[in-house]
Image (cartoon, rainbow over the protein chains, first blue to last red):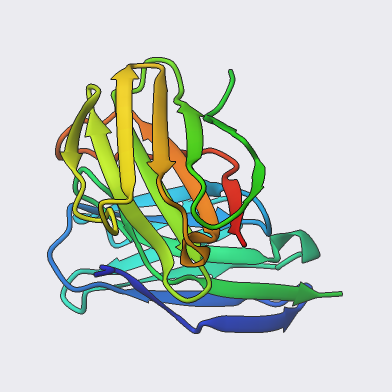
Amino acid sequence: SQQGEEDPQALSIQEGENATMNCSYKTSINNLQWYRQNSGRGLVHLILIRSNEREKHSGRLRVTLDTSKKSSSLLITASRAADTASYFCATDADKLTFGTGTQLKVEL
Amino acid sequence: DAGVIQSPRHEVTEMGQEVTLRCKPISGHNSLFWYRQTMMRGLELLIYFNNNVPIDDSGMPEDRFSAKMPNASFSTLKIQPSEPRDSAVYFCASSFIVVGAGNTIYFGEGSWLTVV
């Protein structure tokens, strides 16, 4: 069974807008990661947040983690057409378990 | 640095044929993962090796699937006999796992399998 579940399943925005994706998980974690997958490609690691962190930034990415609610969010600010991809959250342990992904489409 | 290398990138085969997917992990990594991705089921972990030893194969769908890692630089995923429902993208990934730490997994570009 999958640990993380992303929401929404699909998101369409205009270039320049912010995109927010959410992830919910079921069990306690040590850390949570976000990955990106361009169409036809493998997943690429974006950012990791540890369970004792509440927020983390990396460039235009902002990730929050609420362990009491077992949820995380990924915010992409000032989105670009090149951000069009699927985004997955993954919870830890020695084997990462991925959610079903959010398909983001950024239109010009 | 070379990333995770998978072959073949694309394969079309007939039902009943044997399929072998290959993976070369990133040098120095101690863990290797095989994932399967489909529209219906998303990204599923099939099997996970640590130091060339299978640690968890609970995701392997059935006996038709087998995976080996004879050394630290090579792994195979074999499907015999293949069926149309095996059509999917199969990803190999590797990582240097430190228990309790955040372990980034590096993915290959995938092997796109179509069984007709």
